[in-house]
Image 1 (spheres, rainbow, N blue to C red):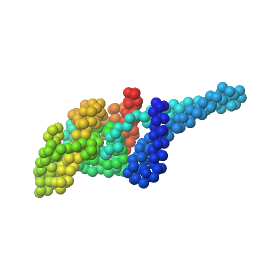
Image 2: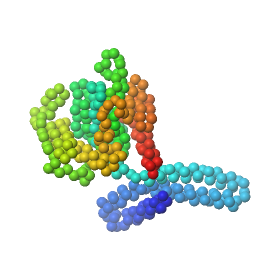
Image 3: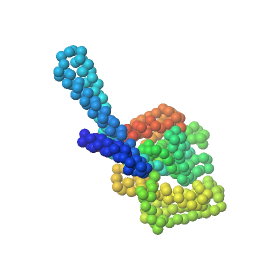
Image 4: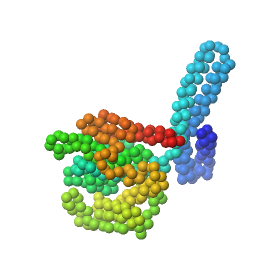
Length: 354
């Protein structure tokens, strides 16, 4: 591990030297590349230098304990030795985390697909609540959300909604949201006051760019039709809705939210490209959970990653056995504690594999 850390330090020094040269400093693109590469390893370099300095101080304290006979000096050295041992242990744990391979997708924008599962209209209403929760999370973090496709119900629920989230390291924050979310509450339509259990599925896909996934236009079948709203009510009188079928994979994406056929087509292809990237990742690494099918499951109540219990004001993430009695705040987008808990569990798992 030390050899790898020394190599990283050497790399940071090389990048710093080259950024000071006229050749790189006068080339904005090259300077940005160097600055980005340097920023990615800066925390690790700083942590390792702190570790080296602490090691040196520990050796000095041990030297005092070997050479000195003065009781007061020996007590001071013994105390410093104990403190430095704890510091070194903490720094080593931090370095191991920083050395974990970074997910190359973490920095990407994200496409989220929410679908009502078991529970009928109540599931659709909760799908709308989850969408609002992620919207509020985005507002708290300064992210931008954009609806790509939606299928509302007449009572204000959502059978399905697909939206994009743009921002810094969005995928790294949201990728653990994928799976079945279960809700337990008394529906507004329930006259007897009985608690119902419903389920909503969430898929989280890294936004794919053309460099990630190339789509051959000959592999696409494009169908256009007239948009319609809940109950079949006409939304507009032109054939602006678009259905895109990717013939090799059989994937189908429809978009009708925009009045422009061109915009609906662009959104549909964006969703298709991200689904294809998720499928590609799943084939390359069967253990990666980004694949859409493994994320979504069947939408059955028994398949759950998280339960939202409204009567008890409690949300429980079953993967990390974390329960919070602040469901009202969670539904307002305050899920950072859950996100951090899931990320920490993922780091612990990967460290154990190493």
